[in-house]
Length: 228
Image (cartoon, rainbow, N blue to C red; front, top):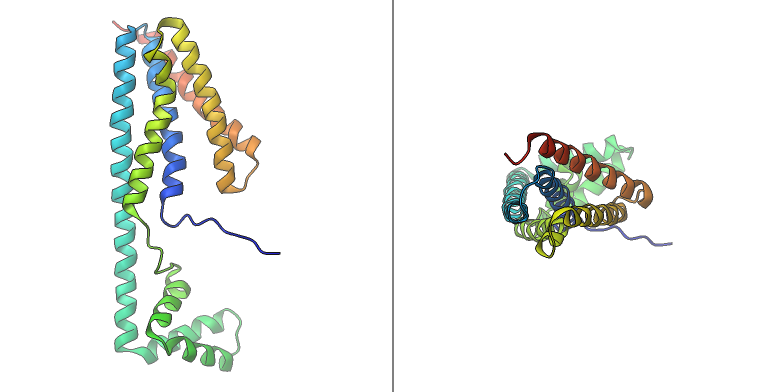
């Protein structure tokens, strides 16, 4: 039977999952912290909108910088390997043969395989990148994709607990924020299980617990400090 692997190398899927999770947790905590301080509805809305906008840009910038740095590091290592293959192919062939021997191939087979791999410069680079560096030269990451995905998904997650405050206010809005946040946290956790292959119930419950703790702590702090 065949099987498929999900391509997560570009960073978009990872950024999307963590983006919506971070947006939900951070903004539900922020909004409930403000609500716990008995702030006015306009103050809660302002805090929620500010948290959504600031968080979205912060997440996007962070993802872009980290993915760009990772991509540039991979490209640098690939360039070093490319130059080594061009200027000292025999030494690189021996190095590749040594890797194959360390993985259980006998010396003759390792030498034969390394010669075949080194016969094509592009194949040689790809082989060295995979065997020596542990990377795929075709998949060094996509910083723009990761940044855009993180921005959009954080905004979606942050908007969910903010929505009730755009329609109603007071205790009703607080309860709706809690309810929507809990449902969204459960769904996000279950979605995360799709990527990790873990139990969806465990993943969803864990996400709900984390979100609940964050919300409870900030609400309590807000209540103790007060809007004054």
